[in-house]
Length: 621
Image (cartoon, rainbow, N blue to C red):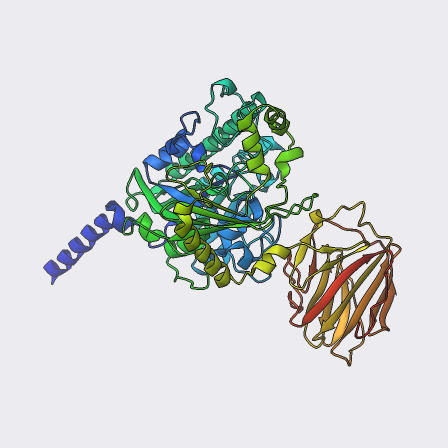
C-alpha cells in the first residue's frame, strides 16, 4: 500500500511538472486577449507589408512572431462606424451606425456583453468612439481624447502600468484589453525622421511638395504608434504571460488622404492585421484568407470559449489562426455613407470584395461632387489646394483630382493586377460576366441585411423644407447635419400623427434637450435635467400631436387639437445641441427608467418647424 501511494505521488508530480513546463498544456483554456488598434492606417503603410519607406520595427516584429493577414478589410472607412462594426459583429446598417459619429441601435449587444458572460475582464485604454459606449472598463481616457495630440501615445504610461499590475494581482481572471490610440489620425505629429523629398509617392496621391510633407507627417505618426505598440508588447512580455495571450494589431480603416478614408476604395478599407499567439500560431506565417473587421467579435468569442452566434454578420476565423483552414470568406461587404458634417455631403456607395481579389463598387449619387474633411477643414498639413493648382496644368493631377471628386455609377477592379485601382473594368465587355455576378452578390447581401435601394437613397438625413425639416421613424439625425445659424428657433414646433399611444416608448428625442414619450397611455416630456411632466391618460390611441415651446420656456402640448399639457420651463430648450434628433427612439443613451428606448407604434411625418407653422396639424390632413 505504501509502495502504491509513492507510485501515485510520483505520477502526480510528473504530471504537474509536465503541466507547468509543456507550453500547450500550460495554456489556460481561455487565453488573455490584447488588441492594439491604430487609427487611420492603411495596410500598405507598414514595412512588413512592403512599404520600404516606413519605419515600423515593432509591427514587423509582431508579424515575424505570428500571422500576417494580406486580405483584411474594414466594413466601412470611418472611425465610429468601423469601431461599432468591429465591436458588434454587425454591418453598419444592421447595427445602426452608418454615418460618422452616429450611435448604434438601442439594445444592440457589443463585445463586453459577450466576453463578460464568459468570465473575462474587458478593458479599453484610450479612444472608444462608439455610442452609446459599450460596457468597457475604461482606463487612460486622457489619451482617448482628440486633443492634445501630445497625449496620443499615452505619455503617463497608464496602459503598460495596467498590464504589469493586472497580471501581478489578477492573473487568474482572463482579460481582454483593447489599447486604442488616435495615432496616426490627423492632426499628424511633427515630422522628425522622414525626408519628404526621398519618399516614394503612392500612385493614388498627387505629387506636390505639400503632399510630401503631409505624407512624411503621416509616416511619423505611424512610427509613433509603432513605438507605443512596442511598449505594450514589452510590458506584456515582462509579465511572462505572452504565451497565454492572443495579441492582435490592426487599424480601423485607411488614412485621411483623397480616395482613401471615407471611400470604399482599397486604400480606405484594406488594413493591416497581425496576430501573435505563441505555440498556437506559426511564427512568420502569412495568410491570404479574406477576413473582415465584422469577424472580430465572433473570433474573440470563439477564442474565449463561447458558442457561435448565428445572428451576427461576422464569423470566427480562429481555425485560420490555428492553421486548420486556409480560407475564411468568399467575399467581404463594405460601405460608406460618408458623414453629415456641414455640407450635407451624402454620397453613399456599397461594395463587394471577393477572395479572388475582384472589387465591385456601386455609387448611388454619381452626379454629386464627393466632399470630405480633406477639401477644406484640415487643421494641419493642408495640401489639397496644391492638387487643385497642379491639376490646371498636369493631366495626371487632373485625373487623380477628378477620381476623388466624382465617381461613375459602377466600378470594378482587379486588385491582383491593379493595387491602386486606377483601371475601371466595369465598361469592358470581357468583364461583363464578373460585373453581373458581383451585382447579384451585392443585391443578395443587401437583401439579407434588409437595406433597400430606397433606404440608401434616403439615408439618415432629414428632409429639409423652407422653415422646417422632417425626420422619418427609426431615423436619428446628427446635430452636425444642421446649419445652426439657420435652424436657430425662437419658437420650436414639433408635429406628427401617431398610432399606438397605448404602447410605451420614445416619440422624439430633441438633441438631448428633452424627449417626448408615451407611458401608461399618457404623453409626457422629460428634460435633460431629469424633470418630467405627463398628461392625463388618453382615451384615443391615435391622433395628431403638436408641441409648441418658446425660448422663454412656455410649453404647450396638444393632442387631437386639445391641450393636454401646459407649463413654464425655467430655461431655453429650443436650441440644437451636440447629439441627435430622433424619431421613435433614443440612440446615444440607455434609459434607466421603465421607459422603452423604442416606440412600438407608428409615427407619421414627424416635422420640426422653426418660429412659424404654415398650417396647424388637423385630422385627416
